[in-house]
Amino acid sequence: MDEIEEQPAVDNALYQESSPDKKTGMHQVWMLAISLSILQIGFGIVTPIFPFYIVELGVGATELGVLAASFALTRILLAGPLGGLSDRVGRKRVLLVALAGFAVSNLIYAYADTIIVMIIARSLEGGISAGFYPAANAFVSDMTTPENRGSAMGYLSMGNMVGFVVGPSLGGILAEYLGIRLPFVIAAAASLVTLVILNLIVHEPERQTSLSELEKRRIPVREVFSKNAKAYSALGITMFANMFAIGILEVAFMLDAVQRYAFSPLQIGVFFGVLGVIVIIGNIAFGKMSDRLGRKWLITSGSLVAALSLYFFMIASGVVDFYLAGAILGVAISMRGPTIQAMIADLSDARAYGSVMGTFGAISNSAYVVGPILGGVMFDTSGDSISALGLTVMVSVASAFVAGIGLPDYKPSKASPDSE
Image (cartoon, rainbow, N blue to C red):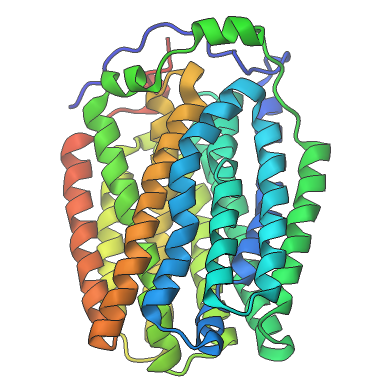
């Protein structure tokens, strides 16, 4: 069994609420999950539209890949700094600014008439929203304990996936009957609604120390990573593989579905709806399972299930086949997603949660730079998505191997590094 290097005793209450009741923390997680679900509706609305938008602008798969990657590229540059900023100025402020930026970028989308303007808007969206997910994950880490953290990450992921189900389906319906520009306006409105709700119902945990004292007690993120370098490296590779596959699917496979199989916006929306329903159910179940049985085997198994689903995408020949492959992929995502986030929090010093989450956000986004661009180029070269999907199968299998040998094997309730 891999042993986790003992962490120094730290004050895990740097961001704790004044009340020690754990239920208070979980209540805040639920409020944040609701806000995140509304935001994700805004994100998801545009998903079925991008392939059709590209056709209207007269560009190809490579340009679509660059459009998708530009979002992640700016997030790479800013996710780490903004994650650290949330450690200093508070999680809530970073979340609110990110939501406002997302609204502005979607309004630019709505009136874009060239691919350059689209890429600028996408880059702006990524840069301004870079702090949202690291801050949200760090917020959950602040408000939970190792014993219930997997469940809490599952709830947060569930909120994310509720929007993921509703958003694409709504976007497909709107694009089918009202055109491809109106959904961007609705996405902007949804993000502003989310901003108001989050400001009203999510409260920054009370600091037990002053900002100056917190600065003195903060430790460099490099020092945190050095204590469990093998495990952090394995988690980084696994997270990269997960987002790489999603990037390939959103460009190469979506264009394949539109051009070779004549999918409508509504059918693409339903596809993401099926995927999302599976993930909503799985996030809660697998999140709780990881708290009881451990994180490692779920992450490793999820990588293998992902490889299987991607192979099914390769051999699929019709709508039903695609939906089946999507359902299997949903199982894989729900096995890995909240479990990876929970293990990152388990391993991390509470004084550097935001910076650690921001760094992993940068890793995730780097995969979403490489995946869409490579998927677009491979699609333009071969004329279909089969070769790109084959590459993702190999990457997923490799990540399962790395997770199997690199991740620590422990049960959070008994051997969490935060248990001191």
